[in-house]
Length: 262
Image 1 (cartoon, one colour):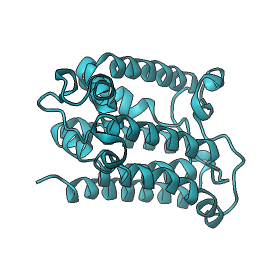
Image 2 (cartoon, rainbow, N blue to C red):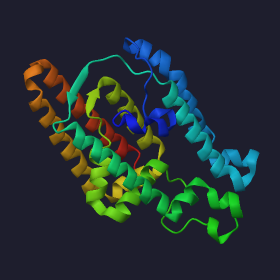
Image 3 (cartoon, rainbow, N blue to C red):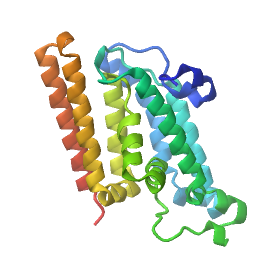
Image 4 (cartoon, rainbow, N blue to C red):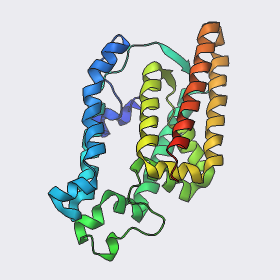
């Protein structure tokens, strides 16, 4: 929504956090933590096994996905970014990034919706035909605990292979102008995904070489961005950015290893 404003009116919560920014890190967390808990708590504690007690096995999964979707969009709708300067800009044209973002998101959505297993994860066949129907059974290799974010990446991989997955998950989702707000939100979301999603950890373990390739390409993009903006950035700023990016990479890698299924 932010990258292509023409599409924002067709997207939930306009497709980006467009509310007035707040000053100071303390105010940022004070304003946004209640909204974040409104997403995290139901997403974590109102899981299908819990919901079965209230809505039955047939509707537990689709109710869970509905709650997760609504709470996420509510969070985006009320989220207020931190008022900060731009850390760096991607070292290629914004038009290229916009085209790549729209094309890859559209392609990923097509891959996602065209795979019948998507609807099993969302709980549609179970709600329509009941849990005992042959249409409601998870096929071998698909975990009932698979999360939607990881599954979308897998559906892209299944059709476009490693190159398509790298373009979608590794490059197209990067913001053109990177701010501290982007870093905070994405790092927290990435840590949460690694800590809570067994499906994500298993998938990363299967495509470890491609996963590392994505990190390598992002490192090249970072250094390209820093080199391009070197004339307007001080030495300490560049050093701090590189150090911060390295720490984030190490932290995320440790979360993947610590929570690795045995």
